[in-house]
Image (cartoon, rainbow, N blue to C red; front, side):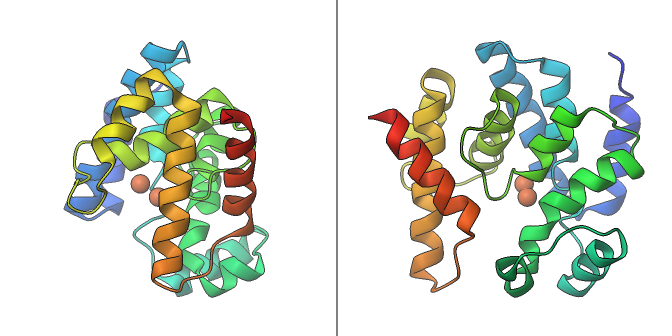
Length: 193
Ligand SMILES: [Fe+2]
Ligand SMILES: [Fe+2]
């Protein structure tokens, strides 16, 4: 392993709440398992899963000011829903704070919240692992078991189901849906048929 897994885990435990860190470890191991199943690089999946929420426990104000400071582009939707920025900022932190120079890992972190059309295998794995990891509850996600099964057997369909759930969830709460998520949904809808 070329990465200091234990050191990075310790670093995450210091910047996250206990509950968020528990979720992080779930995403880490789920990404690892999915990479083994789908033939992705399991070490990259492990590190991307571990670092995906490194910027999650920041306030909206800090997310916005950090992105402005580091020249990270902020869309209209992100301005209204700054939590979306934790993906992009997390990718930036992966390199600047945690020394992860790998662009594939950074991209998987960057797009884990919104998804995007035509994702790489690693991007799809982290996006899906984030949604299905063990601490997610079927009380909140009725078709969770189905998506967990699809994640190992039909990854594109799993991604499609997650995007559909996410869009419905946001619409029910009358929250804005990021255009990248809508584009991703349309893309996966077109390829699963
Ligand atoms: Fe996240
Ligand atoms: Fe997450």
